[in-house]
Figure (cartoon, rainbow, N blue to C red):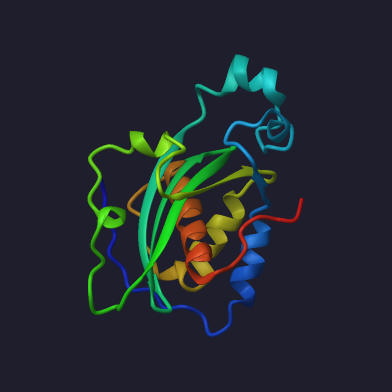
Length: 182
């Protein structure tokens, strides 16, 4: 487990962040593995191709982020399956930046298994990748605030997956819509 503790400098305007969010080409899905979504996924092999050839080979990464913005803390647990999409579990609580958050939402987790249970108290949203996010993620982490402030201790494909997860957490933290209109 690698932990990054970072105070990020946000841009004065969120216009560029909104553009980056739309550039990711993420489509909101009702379920994580939706047969209609697979035809739109960047893997592009359709449901049968994923089941037969790809699904077990695609790398998945878990990104866990705690944020503070505008008087509220956010917890984001993001499961990224490169080329397919991601599932985001999240919630917010009010809090001061001078007081660390407490409670179950911010407790250290030894296992993430219970997040797969839909009865857990976190909000959940699923996204399908409709375009290759690699160039957008690379560009954001080399040229755009707040991502230029973050150094990810990983290499491809982990770098892309962790970068995508961090981008989604930042967008949700500041209230930017992540998905493209369907």
